[in-house]
Image (cartoon, rainbow, N blue to C red; front, top):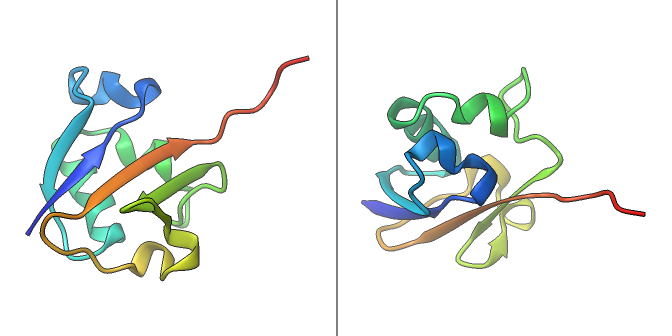
Length: 92
């Protein structure tokens, strides 16, 4: 099953500047593992030492925050779109 992953600008250096990649995965955790396998460096940017998504990384499945679904265990199906959105803070 192919899932389209939207890559945010700050992480595109890991995907040779591709704005989106297609991967095979059964759930969000599997998608993170597939991203890491194809584009090394992703997992450490997205996950903490325990393997859970960092709190400042938001992941959306078809525009719905996975935190309100099943988090990393959220199942994926063919044609789904996953967006990775790092939180932005700061300013004056």
